[in-house]
Image 1 (cartoon, helix red, strand yellow):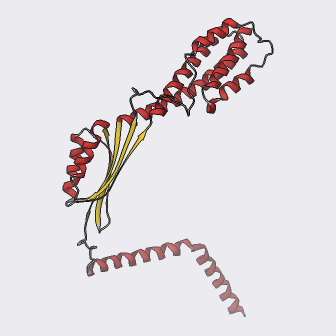
Image 2 (cartoon, one colour):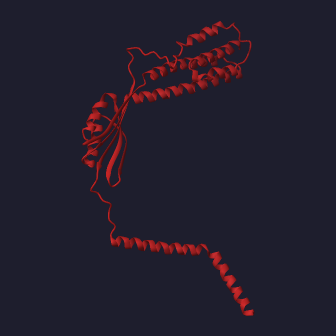
Image 3 (tube, helix red, strand yellow):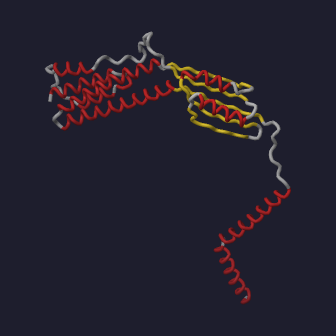
Length: 284
């Protein structure tokens, strides 16, 4: 029992050292196990726990990146330009993106009477990013803007990988302690810590997966348009106006009928009042 208690406290303290923002694991464990008799006669358990942790987690503001470390860059481009023939350019731009192996994730088209434009998002591998961007831009007759952003996430990438490694080591030690636990209280305390560390691991794994995907595929947000200066709004003919007026009149008649039906209790009440008023008037 003393070995289990001491192990729980020690692993909680190790989990606390992994991150300033993730110190709840150590605090929860300290609250879950509060026996004063865990003293210093458990050195074997302490050495076993120490062997599970390969190295302390790096500080968030002091991640060391060696010269040989591959940089993790997220590239994003936003481009807007004018084309000569919207329909032909739309087909050609889609074909260019497909030929380069790009993934078209969305496409939206809009026509307001003055110009017709479309925007679509293409994801492409980093190695083909610049080549595809130049090929798409070659279709333009006037470039409004082109913005390229490169975000270096190498430091965050390495930091997450290191923290994830340490958290998995802590989780493994909790699982080993769980096998030795005999009392219900001990089992519940360890299982609670396993749940907490597992949630933290899943959060880190999700973030790492997201970064890997963003690094592997760059994003191009493309908008192209054609001006339609000579386009006019369609004129409504005289017969179309007559047809519309007839429809409006018929709709008004139907609405009046529905209104009369809706006030039938008041119509009956009016007839009753009129009947008795007439009778009274004749007697008078």
